[in-house]
Image 1 (spheres, rainbow, N blue to C red):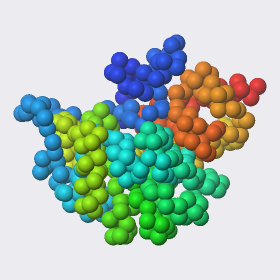
Image 2: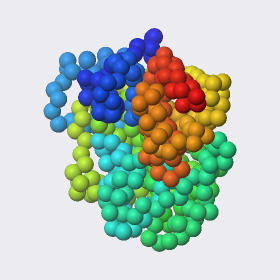
Image 3: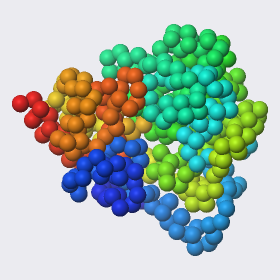
Image 4: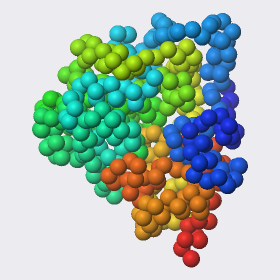
Length: 395
C-alpha cells in the first residue's frame, strides 16, 4: 500500500491545540505556515485505521465501551513482537492518556511533600504532574557532554538515598533530547533504584520511534525485581497519531501496585470509555506496522535535512541526530540571545512555532524543540524562513 506523507494539511479549524496556540501567538500568520510544536503529527491518518473505523461505525453503536479480547490480544502481540516485552492481560490498565496516569501514580505512591525525581530537560507535564499533587519536584539534570546527554548516576544515587524521594519519573526514549538509553545505562540506573527502594514510573510513549542503528529496551524487562516495582506507561497515540482517541496502556506487573493504582484511578475519576480509541488501537497494532516503518523513514529524512541545513548555513547552531522520538533538540545558545529574544526570533521573524527549550526545565535555556512529524516540504520551508531570519540577525 502507498502511504501519504506529503499532503500538507491545514488543521486551523479542526480544534488542534497546536494550531490554536499558533493563532493566538500571531494573528497575522500566513496560511501556509504549519506549527511544529506539540507532539502530534501533520500526516494523514493511516488508511488501515481510517477504513477500519469506518467499517466499525457501520457495525456498532457508540455506547459505553471498554477493551475487549481482541483489543488486549493486539496490545499483547505488539509488545512482544516489537519490543520482546511479555505482557499478560491482567497487567494492562487503560487511562485516557499517560499524563493522567502520572498524576494518579504520584498521588498514590508518594505522600504530600515527598519527592519525585525527574531528569531535566524533560517533558514539561512531568513538572505539573508532581506539583499539582503537592509533591516535591526533585531534579537530577542530565549531563551534556558535547552533543550527547548522559544520566548523572552519582547525583541520582545521592538524591534517592533520601527516604522522602520515593519515585523516579523516567522518560525513555527521552523527550526532548532524543536519547535511546542503552542496556548498560538502564542496568546501572536499575541497580540504584533497587538499592535505594525507589518506585519506577517509566514513560515509554515514544518507544516505537527509534532510528536505525538504535534499539529501545523496555526498562522493566531487564530485571524481574525491577519489574515488580515498575509502572510502564505506553500508548498508541504517539505511534499512530491517535492522541484524540484518549487511550493509553499502563502496564503494572505487581498485583499490589496494580490494585493501588486502580484505586487511585477510581479516586481521581480516571476512566476510559473510548469506543473508537479501543478499535483504533487494535487496528493500528494489528495492521499498521508498515505505515510506521515508512513514517520513521520520513522523520529520519527530516532530521537529516535540518542537520545538513545548520552544518552548511549556520554551523554555530548544533543539533545531533536523534536516537529516538520525532522531536529534534536544537542548540541556539551560540546566538547569545535570551530566551525571550530567541522566542521572538522564532515567532515574529521566522514564522516558526516550536516548543521553547526553557519550558523543559533546567538545561533547556537557549534550545528549541522541533516536531519533525510533518511533510519534508513543510520542514524545508520552515528552514528557509529560519535561514532568512538568521541572516537578518547577523547583519
